Amino acid sequence: MPPGAGDDMTGYRSIFLDEDWAHQAHYGWHVLHEVPGLRVLSQRRYGLIRQLALVEMNGIAALRGWLDKTARMAWRSEIVIHDFSGSFDPADLTGLAFAPAGKGDALLNLRTMVIDLRRAEDELMAVMSSDHRRKIRKAAKAGATFSARDNPDADEITEFMVLQNALARERGFQPARQETVGRMYAAGNATLYRVTLADEVSCLHVYRTAGKAIFMHGAARDLGSSGIGQLLHWKAMLDLKARGINWYDLGGVTVFDDANGIYRFKRMFGAAPVDLGREWLHRGRAVRTARAARSLAGAT
Image (tube, rainbow, N blue to C red; front, side, top):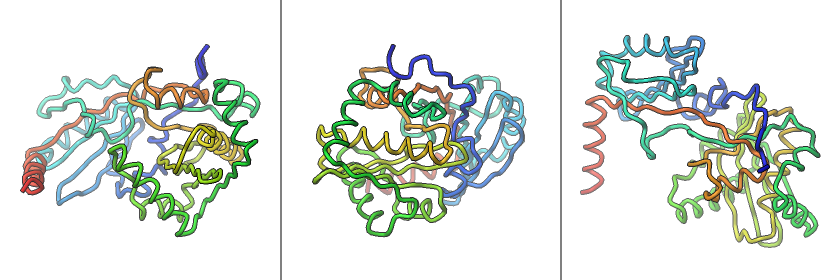
């Protein structure tokens, strides 16, 4: 049986649905509308309105009602619906057109891998792959050092950002903003985990809510086959468990397939695959016009 197979995910609810998730706490979104099963967040960008509807199964009817009320202003809005139930059908709507959010448009992960930290420590180790266990022992035996900093100093944050910016350039993703991760540490919402061995460094930026944590950003230097990456996640798991965290979300994956290296790496920790539903996107006329203008300006 592969690691994580058959996990009981009873009681797990995505960290994105928590009230102290980073969107509301640190990314400038505020609650526009909330009823059981539905929370609508809003922010302004370039003078236009951006809205994110987080909907669960028991909020589908409320979502349709909210969309009916907001339809007349949708021409100047970008509306993203993240349907955690996967049951919302935009074909049922009149007056608003939604399409599946493309790769560059999705705001939240659609698939993730989650570790149940309610298990005992020896069970957490037992459900890992033998290769991950071997590398954890190898790195520990070689003298790798671990630190967990809830309030890292400016030099530690800068080191992490330098490493992450280099990784972002190499792999073509958008790195975190230093001022944003700094606010998360200052507010007590995040921890910077770090393992070093000789010239090798591996870091994790982990965000916490009540009972849950998510690996948001990572960075490394000279990461070889020493196993410090595996040791880092293992030590982070133990630290989170000691804090009373029940669920460790290892972050998004594009597919649930062992042919995908990121999925395979996370799966080998004993993480269970979790489908987070679908995202739907509506861009009003004013939003489409503004995006076209910015694109044209960037091309000249």
